[in-house]
Amino acid sequence: MTPFYTSAEEIETLVKGFNTKTLEKEKWTHEAHLTAATWYLKNYSLDEATNLVRNGIKEYNVTVGGTNTSTSGYHETMTIFWMAAIYFFVNRDTSKSLLDTCNELLASPLAERTLPFEFYERETILSTEARAAFVKPDKEDLNDEALENILKNKG
Image (cartoon, rainbow, N blue to C red; front, side):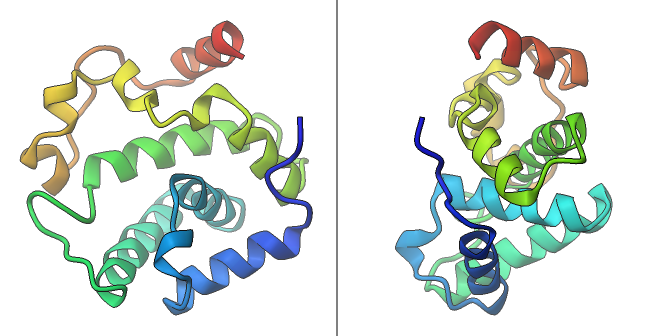
């Protein structure tokens, strides 16, 4: 399998663009979100990383002409969910480089866009309530065991 990134510099450039709000809107993909989250989790505690990502996404959305409303833009439950899932992945082997961690995450089942639906009913996670404030999973608890099972069963 071809790695998503070929150098740590590519990742640093993406994160710098996100941080400075100069990253082109079309480059702010699902994979870019996961990459930025991984970078933050390799450099900060879970709480610090989550706050930085949360604020960064909100600011980035506005900078590129988007909005953060009850129906579009920033989504609190998705952010908390993805940060928790990536935190689990990053901490499975903290000795791995940022480059290896990002590439392995993006190649894993934990990077699939549909992952939240393993834990949430569609109507729950797509609700305006879940966009505005964190809502706990209503299908399966989000924990290390559940995430490890996904890696083993779908990987």
